[in-house]
Amino acid sequence: MGLFLTLGGVVLITFLSPTLGAGWSWDFANGLGFVAFGGLLYLTLASGPVGNLRAHQVLGYALLGLTTVHVFWLLLIDPVVVEYVLPGAPLYMWMGIGGLVLLIVLIAIGLPQYRLRLHKHYASFRYWHRVLAIAAIAATGYHIVGSNFYLHTSLQIVLFVVLAAIVCFAGRRLPVSAVISHRTARLYLGIGVLATLAFAGVRNAPL
Image (tube, rainbow, N blue to C red; front, side, top):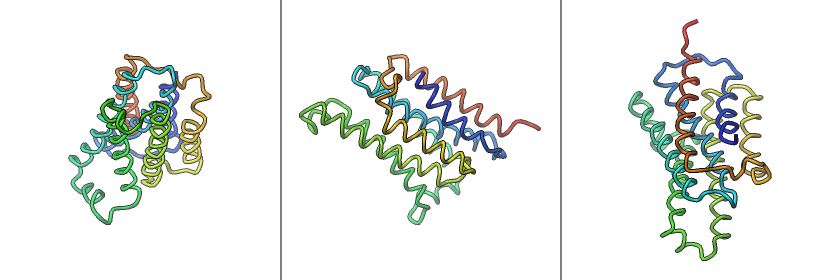
């Protein structure tokens, strides 16, 4: 349920304001970005004490894969995009890069060989892992809102921020906070592809 709420919530918020399509390829690539953000929210929800650690890691790999496809797809289809990852790029682009770096760090320090070196106690690891996850959500959220590509109204921005804030600061109180299994990553990828097709399809459907 939590996966549907976070992923569906992020994508549905983008539909609250009519947006003309920029072409299937461009919108599909950006749809993957929104799906990746929804996955990041759910990954934070799915960090409860009864969660499956291995399933959490695999979901992180799936999220990193979609994020990487989002980035390199845009770079391949539009050479101008490279200007947004060079010095002088807008702050929202650097925040997006920062969010990706934080995601890689989160995955790396979650591996047993690094986790045990950095943290003697699991409680300490969980605390700092969550702090970095919230930082990744904040950076990526700024990247999405700052780009102003699909969130054009105050209502959309408020709902987007509220959804992220609930996950970051009230997620542990939600009944879906620890629901995760070995099938979650496959479910996430499947729903994510469908959500991305809907994201691009609605904007590029013939009138």
